Image (cartoon, rainbow, N blue to C red; front, side, top):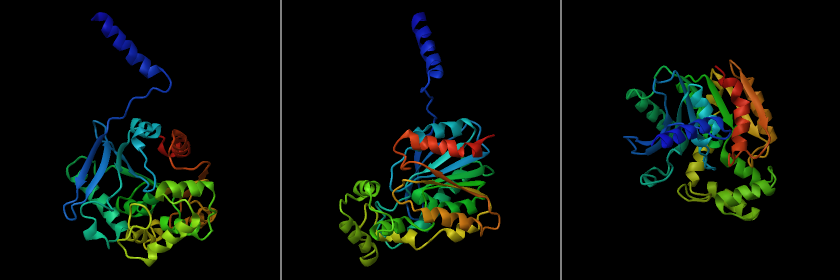
Length: 305
């Protein structure tokens, strides 16, 4: 028995000392059922024993599956004292989808996250006075400014979001404004199981030409894509009073250099312009730890104590 205890103690020590070993951040996975629409809103929450005065809200992409909780960045932020709330894929499908097929999904997505946060505050799970930071990727970018204004966020981190909408990115590929290169071909094949540009062009056109409940592109209806496309976030962003940091991966399939330049100009119209604009090499689809490491490197100055 004594030998067993000594062996276990040695293994525990080695796990702390050996490179590459890390302790998994304890987090809970739950779903909040919104009472009015009865949407089930999935989320994870990593929380310190004593509730932190700093909260990071993570809003993931729609076109790529990510697991932020498994990254070194997540662990580092938690160890730095942040409670971390990740809200995953606010529903655009499911049991109550068909009764809501003509809904403004973008604003409902915002409302769902607000309802979740207010619920967690009411139950005293989240600290109401906590300073909020928001990290959003791709389509999460389009709802982040509205949430930042509601909660007077300190900083917005916005990754791979053009100034308009994801659907505009599809249109640009269909119209040749973004080349149909290997990166775009692989992306469209993976997301929509479409091999040819001509078929993709037809499907993109269908989004505006066919009924709102028709599935032209992937698992979301035409109304879903158009609800974001018709509700740009530029006005919401222009009124944001905190800091912002835009990060563009140069090989991201929907990236266009003019978006980077446009966003820099937009920041000059803000009353308290404090926007940073950064570029990173790579695809920025977060399929590997490498993309997360680049984000960690770029964001490290913002998360120093």
